Every structure is written in structure tokens, then in C-alpha cells.
Length: 87
Image 1 (spheres, rainbow, N blue to C red):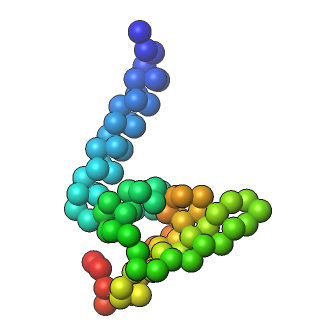
Image 2: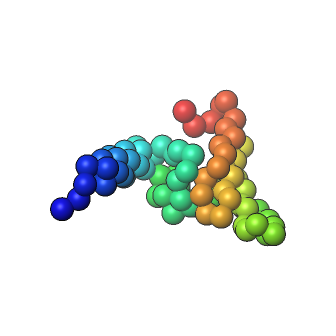
């Protein structure tokens, strides 16, 4: 039997997972998504740059319309969007 704290944590994770799946289905991306989740929501980038550092791997994904996504060790950390592109 799980204690109340563990049940609450599991419930929170389940809710977050459902919200993430819904965002992907709507073509939306969010900070904290994995590279795979972003690819499911938007598709693979047209171009990308990779930087290997002492602390890991950083990537810059470049999409049409000058949208840039930044990843650190496989997680989306920043979104730079041109005002004329995606909503």
C-alpha cells in the first residue's frame, strides 16, 4: 500500500504525462520536453548545430521561419520564435 505522499506524486506525474501528450497532439512544444517529444510535435528540424561541452551536449535546432530551439543533454531549454512564424 502506498502512503499519501507517494500517491500524490504518482497522480501529479500522471497528470503531467497526459498534459504533455495533449500538447504534442496539438503541435505545441514546452520547455522541458525531450528531443523525441519535440520531434513528435513539430517534426525534425531543417538544420541543427551541435556543441559538445565538458558538461554534455547542446543542440540548436533551426526551423523554417527562423524558429530556434535549444537543447541541453536532450531536454528543451529555450525557444526563440520569430513573430511571423508559429503561434
